Length: 175
Picture 1 (cartoon, rainbow, N blue to C red):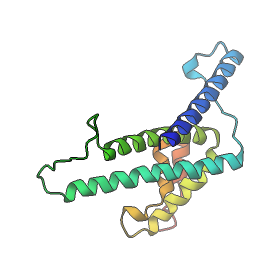
Picture 2 (picture 1 turned 180 degrees about the horizontal axis):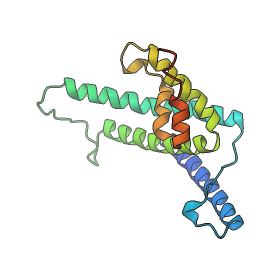
Picture 3 (picture 1 turned 135 degrees about the vertical axis):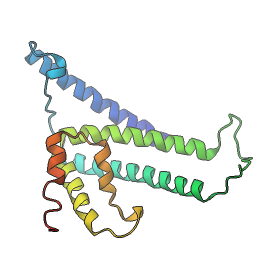
Picture 4 (picture 1 turned 90 degrees about the vertical axis):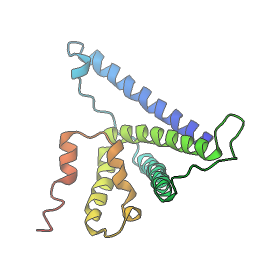
């Protein structure tokens, strides 16, 4: 898991550097406009790359939420009596604590990557999110049936216009 985290952090740093580079280019083109008022349109990434990265990041984000939900369910089902965990390592952390920490860091790095991709390739993210929102109408069960793509909303670069486009017209077919 540490190698996955390293690669994700590296990819996130590259994307952040790319964004900063385009911001500086835009600032050079328009030196009279303050930095906080510049609107930055990132060039889109390769479609095949975006498709692959979206599938991968969606998997990591879904994995995090499934583990989080199962952890919450376990805590709710356990008795209130504290358990003694004898599996502590020499540094005082259990394997489960270290694993959860790594998964949380993977989730954070994946979220940053999704934010960048949704900014540069909104159409690819929009299609996945819109389909997930539409399919929410037919779900009768629990959290396991929620499409993983719906979780992309929390990590996406959303503007008012983008958010409106996701939810506009979704429920008009019901009436």
